[in-house]
Length: 295
Image (cartoon, rainbow, N blue to C red):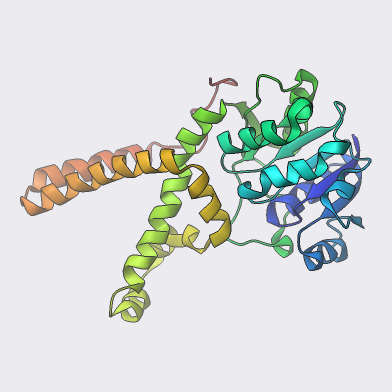
């Protein structure tokens, strides 16, 4: 049980965390702050937070758990803003989609207080944003990756594991570098491909006609293209090197299809499709992550 959650960023991710903590009976009070006062006010009106704070620093005053739910590019400035009230007894987590840059930001901003910080990435979210879409069930059954540093306090790491587990999450550990390499492949590049697919159509003369003919397959493939532009700009920029490495793998795979088509090689084309079809048919989300540590 926590006495007070200091919530910095009252959007989809932060609001859903607050709702889930409240529903589970894990927190008595939520004090929230967002850069936009109207967002903070709306969060209070919806009952997501109990008290509006005029600054990030005042949001964490008296808190024993803090969630930083801001764009990854704003992590360092946010942690610097709250540094003077951070104590070893306080658990601080983020929900960013990249981790190496977040850990670097925490080292630069929190310095001697970095032991309280447990970097976290809940594999949850939607293509919509805003506190109006927050949902107490957003994290239920989802995977959460923790990427502790060598200075993370054991007590705070255990508390982080316990709170996410209490919300119905499967918790595992990775190093920040391994995390970013993996999610460049399974999240960041797929988002960039969805953005590119939409742009490749809209830039054609007959784009409206083409889109009017699109069906469920196109809808499912491009769903994530409706994601928040600023957030994904920051994610792609923060994980640039790993994303670019994955684009090279994708280009190689696409080139195999182009070669088969150009050479009228039906067997090669079928083999490529069969490999993809078989792999996808046997894939189960989260099924292969059974170890707690991956360094």
